[in-house]
Image (cartoon, rainbow over all chains, first blue to last red; front, side, top):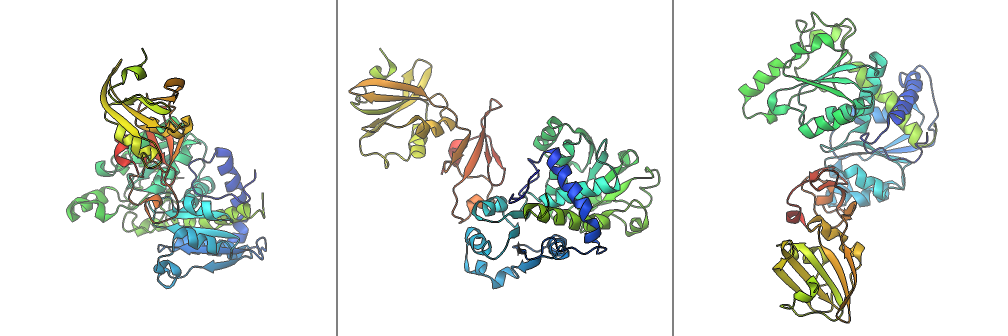
Length: 308
Length: 156
């Protein structure tokens, strides 16, 4: 399977074979990602990191992925100090930067920005989030986490929180449908997953169950994927608090769960997972953040043609 | 007598194109999509709410310009039953139905205000056209947002 010179814009149209190929490549990167082994796989290659929006983990894990493979990183720095503040278009920025680097990582506040960048760039573009659009490396690292910490075949997973606006959970559901997962959706009525997405993922092979409380689902699943509910989605603080309390994981919530249950979260969390849960074998969100490194290493290696 | 011959309230054209069977009330939108009359040297005439075999319809006549079917296909988004008649020496020499294209560029604007195609970037809007359901759907090539109703309201 050839990924060389491919842009990574969205996983929406990825086949199961493509995803499996990337996850297998990531597994081989793990000892390099954790510093056990040194690599110069991408020595002499330069990655341009263009973040038009703040981000900590995505930017840092892309940078460390490149550095761990012996490559170099070129950072856009602050948008205020760059030509963008003078009104330069993204298309122009891309046409300039592709002359400085071998691949471009882009995060941009507008949906479709990565697609646009791919049309103007002569080097591969990796989408690190375009507004409320896609965030393919997050989806891939979520799948990798499930594969490493649980299993993708015959998976029973529950997704909890904001399932209406959360692009992370939408993309994850599309990908999990390729594996025929049983997906339980847990959300307050006002943050339900859009009907159109539910029917799409059922058509692609997933089984969907909808419930409105974590207790109704948690004892039966292999993975619980929590997301943050944003206060701004609610008309008043009391309404938010009511919903937030209902979708909270505490030690009490975990008393009858499967021994092998894993809890994931794309982070940052606010208070949806009690910090006491961090010390249980169920907590897997920090490992999930680490898994972003081997997955991004694999993608960089693949699109730059250093591995196949 | 053909439909074209009966449309004498607006004079017959000697040479050019007649777009017939346009959904009633959509002729002005058809002109907008085709960039008419700016893109034509000759006279462009329109009939609104003309009586046809299947109820009311609009008709557009463009003198001295033969439009290609592919050129006109994009009007199928708002007038899926339209026909294109090429007229030479007052006779219909070729008649084609429009086909709904699978992809349209620069015709409709995305309804998502935060879509990159609605910024000052040097790109034109692009949509994949989905005709699987009875309802025509346009999916933005950039942000994925779907337009499923009132397409005419979003013409560029």
